Image (tube, rainbow, N blue to C red; front, side, top):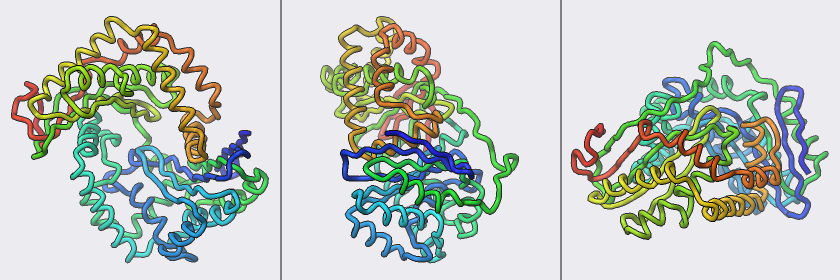
Length: 423
């Protein structure tokens, strides 16, 4: 059972009751992320997410951890380029305590200067962790190469320089400017009383009155990104070369998004995909290769990732390009299409078996489309995708003139010809 309620202050609550389960997931999503940061604020969205767990007026950071553990539950948060989310997942009998805990963090975090200083070091270590993980690091470099100066090209973790200089006043000012009721969605999925949940949320989030209204002229309005092509090499002493090849994708709510997922699945979305079979299984050039989609409110990217020995890098690029040309020229056959559609439907249904997956879907549907999209509707949309639709979309999006290639590793200079070398 799905229900949507909008409080008088603009907070949206989306609920799905699942009485056959024993757990409940509650998430508070704010439609603010890395792309909304101004110059000098890089990483504030992510750092703010960290600080909400570092003590409130009623609970110390240690008490927060002890309390969620004592409930046998899970509490966490994450930041994306467009959203920040805080959530709890507990047994249905512990819902009141979990909602109280989540509400306390959201409204009454103290932002103690001593905790801020400690958490700076934690985030700096997180940044160093990415630098030491080439699979993650090449994705960050690729976003920067593809989006250039657009905010989507920034690291979610921010800059080390910004982290070092953050002060309590910066966090409070950022939160007051960006966190507002009309930007907030509360998603609840699982076994709970709808009336009791709405009553509890109304008493906290329904009475939320921000200290200041956001001035549109003072906050930069999101601008749609451009996709820039080119070949970029980032030299680093590693055992392998890590490669990203990016092409234009689609926005999250685009009418062709289901066909886009099928296209991605055929190209590199699984072990039966063309790239996995051709590059790894037939030629043995890589251990890891796959493609994935990054979808935003006003743009998107399809990225192929692979890791290989430096001597094989050019061969991998050549084979990937060959497979893209083959897809554009010959399209897909019925057997391949049906296999990929079944793969997508299976992954979708498995991902929505739990309350956490359902809570995520509720929030994302509301933020990106402003409405609930049922599982039946999604499955029907996947079934409607035709071979002609996928073929047409491949011609529209898989444009080599816009392809961006980012390589990280011990590459000899001039491996790809006219690449731009990065330090």
